[in-house]
Image (cartoon, rainbow, N blue to C red):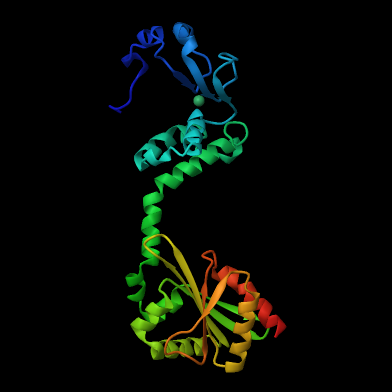
Length: 286
Ligand SMILES: [Mn+2]
C-alpha cells in the first residue's frame, strides 16, 4: 500500500499549468467539476459507465462490463505488459473484479458483468497460478520420480483399455522415454511386465506412448507397439506409419527386434486421444 500514489500526494495543478500532465481516466469518463482545470490533460479513458461524451480527442474505451479493472487488465495483457505482474499483484487486482461481478454469479452475466471480465480473470489466473502450474508439471513429468515408481506403476499410472473390432488393446502413457525405461529396467523385464499385463487384461496388443519434456520446454513423443503376433504387428505398424496424420519416424531400438515397433513423433501435440482413432481405423479394416 505504501507504494501507491494518491491524487492528493501530487501537485497536479503545477503539472497541468506547465503542460506536464498526461491523464488516463479509469472507471469514470469525465473529471469531477473540481478538477476541470485538468481537462486538457486527459488523453485516455477506460470506463464502463454511461459515456458523458467528454474529451472527444482522447483515446476512449467505454464499454459494458462488471469492473473497469477488467478493462485495464485486458489492455495490459493485450500490450504484452504482464511480465511485471506478480502473483500478489494479480490477487490484489482480482479483488475488484470478484466484488464487481459477485464472484461471477451466473445469473448476473449480461446485466452486471460480461465476457470482458471473464477474459481478464482468465488471464490473471494464468499469472496467479503460474507457479503452481509449473510445480504440477514438474512433478508430473519428473523423470526420476517416475522411474522410482517402478515398471509396474509406470505402466499402470495412466492406462486405458480399448476394443478395436475384435482386438483388445491397452495403452499406457508414461513420462520417461523408452530409452530411459529400457536402460533402467532392461528389455527382458519390460517384456515380462508387458506379458503379465496383457494376460491380466486379456489384451491382444499393447502400446506405450511416452511424453517427455526437455529443460528447454521442448516436448517429445514416442510410441511403442507390442504385439506377440509378428505378422499382425508388421501389418499394423505399416498401416500406422501410412495413416498417421502426425509426422513420425520409424526407429530401430538397439538390441531389440521381434515383437516391438517403435515410432518417434515429430509432432508434440500427439496424445493417446489422437492416436486411438488411427488404430481403430486400422483394426476395422484388417
Ligand atoms: Mn467501476
